[in-house]
Length: 464
Picture 1 (cartoon, rainbow, N blue to C red):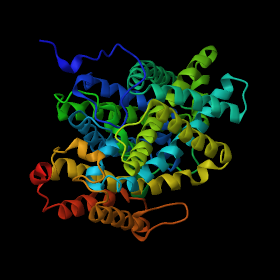
Picture 2 (picture 1 turned 60 degrees about the vertical axis):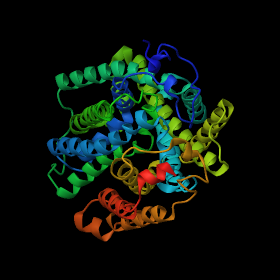
Picture 3 (picture 1 turned 180 degrees about the horizontal axis):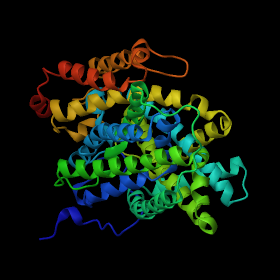
Picture 4 (picture 1 turned 30 degrees about the horizontal axis):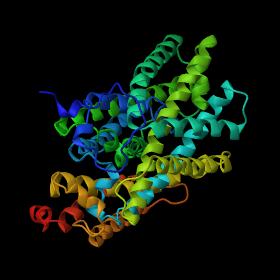
């Protein structure tokens, strides 16, 4: 007997037909092994590598920096991969599932934070790609960003299968590239001058790097299930979790470790990492720059795809729509890319001044969402949902679930004393010496949501 879950061939590459709607069982395909490549390949960028340089630049010794990166990525990956396990069971985009917690229209509140951070990520990635593109082509800033944006939209429009295939190729090609880079650097020896202030362990700095690594992985939570929703429902949650976690943890930790090594022994390269790494290959530098550029396009595609899903979830919730057309997809992706590219052009000389602060603020809005979503899925409803009701404003999930929205807003406000920004440092953050807002951001909403929902009869809800 043929397997109905393999009717769609993964060898067929075409424009994705499904959007925010439930993926029918006859259109499910693939194995969870593909998730390893999506997340490992997605980490193979100079953006991820740059995160690893932060500890060294802050004065933390290399060994302690590596420990903070590994621990932070481990914690963040656990929560991020837990979201991925929802994909095969539910067969819908990550943020659509949030309607069960916040209400069909109420889910638009956390979605605004997702969309804002998505647009800023796209802008920052474009600025990173600009220098590499300008070293390959005689183009100015505007032309470079437009070329990069156009390639991103084209691939994101094709969608799910293209993203998976590109990630698989980049896992092999970029993984090999960075292995060669590591070998070249180790055999050359250090070029770092003796520091004026020797590196030393400081708990506050260690916690800062730990938090940054944790945030790197946690930030993927709002869209991780988008890349597992086509898997057959027979795929176990455990295998989905393991392959996602392995790809993200290994990819992020290994590349960030290389970034830390670069900052400690070859600081000149970290000033312009894309250009510096390419220069190691002499006459082959142009091929390396192309590969680095393609990696940036891949992570930009995933970010745009996520932004499109979030924006569509918000719009369709307000209008009671269950699906959207391909023309709508292209138009919305173009609109998001125009906004992000415009931000990049207008702020290209001062973007870094406020970018880290804004992302820290956005993360404080995303983490409580993650805690509420996971608590609902694993502890309250335990994976039992009525999918078609998530598209009905008058269904069992209501338009707005006010108690949950109150928990969400309260959880955001409780993080403020733990935050550390360029213009503000909360009293608890000042006491600890680091931003640890993510910690209460995970714990408080999970506990409050479980208490608010403790009397919910899920069986009666589904029956109704």
